[in-house]
Length: 318
Image (cartoon, rainbow, N blue to C red; front, side, top):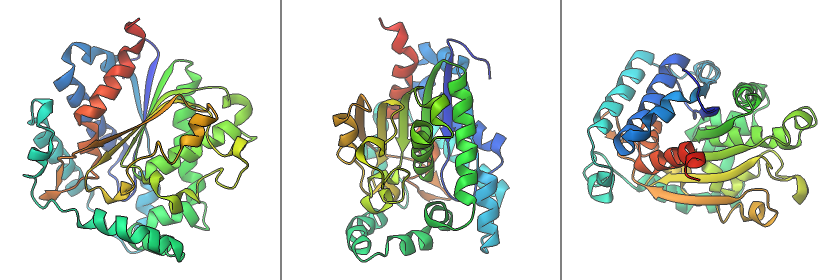
């Protein structure tokens, strides 16, 4: 994709099986583009001129899950992702991304988020958070507590793409989804504090970080993040200017859906300019049922479109 005005967007995908890199980048970018085109058609060229990259580690998660007996139909997956995207593109105008429309989505249920809300504190208190994560998402548990080099290899992929963007010395927008939010956080911390990376990248900034369906609100998950056991001055990343957190109703992955309260110390220490939380309705349907964690549903949502639009046009508004 061509570049203009030195704008780079780095997307970080989440957990579970993923299609090939080029397919996942295509569907993710198309969803993002469709949202901007729907809401801000006059500024679409700015997005098209930006350098958009995907920090891809899907082959690593695919191999890990297959080693643990899981099976994956890539053609079916990408077909269903494109079907979800096609359906979401038909929803216009943006005001229709509302609770009224969400209530019509087939198979909508708040049970999993309710269970997460109720059980997470109890299970965390008795040390059962990781067994539950391992049951629901083996790759997430391996990333957080595994003994293999899986986490290192995943971070290496994300770090490489983010550093490529930072090396362009332009404006950088980082977008992460699900597990990718944990990985992105760890990479941001490494670039801020790790002696291997901080000398080169410690002073470089990501202008905006958008977290979608992030599990970062769970206090028991945060214990496994990079820097969690460090002294306050080295506990958090120091290279993000603005942080936008978007959480969908009934998305159990982000059952604790606000981050401003959890990371307020970053504000107090003046490590970040703002942490803003947004609650949305994700209208994506995957395999015939509501999927409020769907990345396609997040990327095409009007709230995300506005965040991206405002970032793209920020230096044009003065």
